[in-house]
Length: 318
Image (cartoon, rainbow, N blue to C red; front, side, top):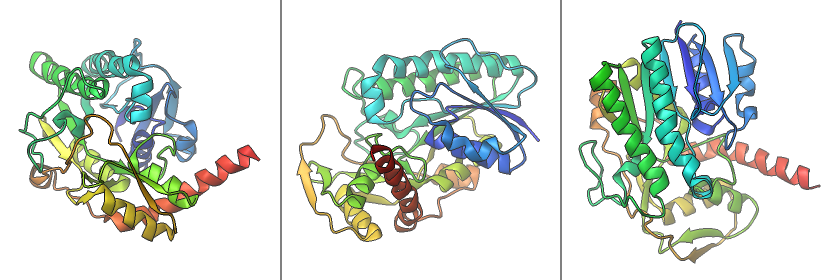
């Protein structure tokens, strides 16, 4: 059994990772300041005696008593709604939060895993995106607070690896979805699900021909654990290479939910990437990982959760 710290533990991905690590027999310490995370996501984890939780902001000094085998830094404001509302906090989590958690890993001689993002590739001119593609990013653009927080974080991880011989992992996560996503986080799948399940037209920005590649959360968790257990210290794309247009996604959501909603188009936000697809040959060869859950199956698995969240919201209003 390993003793593992997970930051961002109350978030969408962090809570699922806590559950998976606990299921595999590890002791897990969860940490979150609950700016965007919800402790209800950790209801299952709290049932286990090998889980503990600390409400703490990772941009402040972090103290954890006892040994640690791994530090997994997932804390981040990853959704457009939150990082546009809190751009400075987003940058601080990527810079100060990464620095504090790296320092803790160094102190404990622990393996360090940093969750980066496909956004480091910006609006890519290469498709699919391999790990050695340097990207097409605007450091002063409307999305830069998130993009640059992750790019800086990757650079800091590399520096700690080189200067302190820290054992590091870097996961470049592509669009992930599933239960525990917030309905209000501004990403396309919760937006579409909320609209489809309430009978409202699905809002497609631009002509809908821009593409994304969607990875179901259980596949993502398997990929992150496989990366943690590997010896791979360079960045690795973790995502599903099944590339879909946003128009296609809208049609699948309508089919899966049985909704009779229509589709409307609005102006595309500035610098919205036109394509996004991971090249995952490195994950296949070095981690022995590739996704198993198709888009239709994953959306079906997610529908009940989104319905429950809408019911909870309507009950509160009543």
